[in-house]
Image (cartoon, rainbow, N blue to C red; front, side):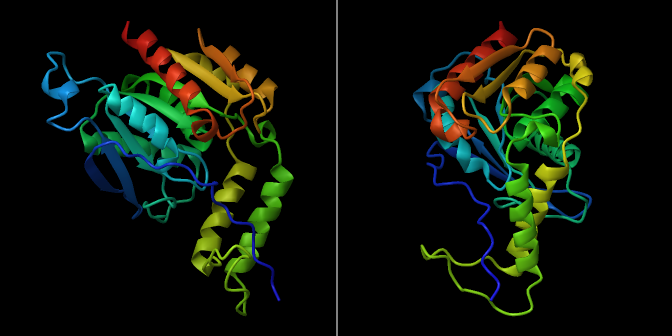
Length: 288
């Protein structure tokens, strides 16, 4: 009997509790439906009702591989409590966004983010990206500079060599691909009671895992074109080798580099306070 593939899901995290002011479903030319969620103070919130200042520039939040925007829950809650909106995107084939027909790439998902900003009527945004989302953030800051006010990149890498554990990721991708094409039913549940993935779910998981094995391919020298304030952040025990984080920070003019003590790769979950502090510092640099 075929064994169940490794689950490609994040361990539990607290989803946003902040006021959800708008949900968007943005269609792409290749047929994907992109789900995005605008969290902002409610109309009767004292921060908004008593403010004489223009609405702050929103923060666009881009999550990591196999996740959805809820991983930023604690950061979204704190940010909105400070009066700043957050536009959080479920990347295609993840969360409540659908796959579409185009080949998956980080460049494609960066274009998706720009499409969502346009649909939301947000011409410029601060960007907070985690893992895959941080890679997309680098592409946005480099290639769509006029729309990016600042970038806080958590756990980004420039190429597949800049990621530890690629052999394990490849094995997980192959196991999910095998489950997606199985000819007979396997176990119905994992030992903890989690339902087995469908063939379609396993195929999507395999495709997302292969994406990390095969991409990105970003030349460090190309990041010298980034002109907005940037913070490059990683955990002390990150899956991204320190040399890769250093290379990104050194390539971007005047970038800040922060290594969060004791943290692993999952910074929005294990160190949301550190993420929020660095995000606010980066925003302040841009808006000074």
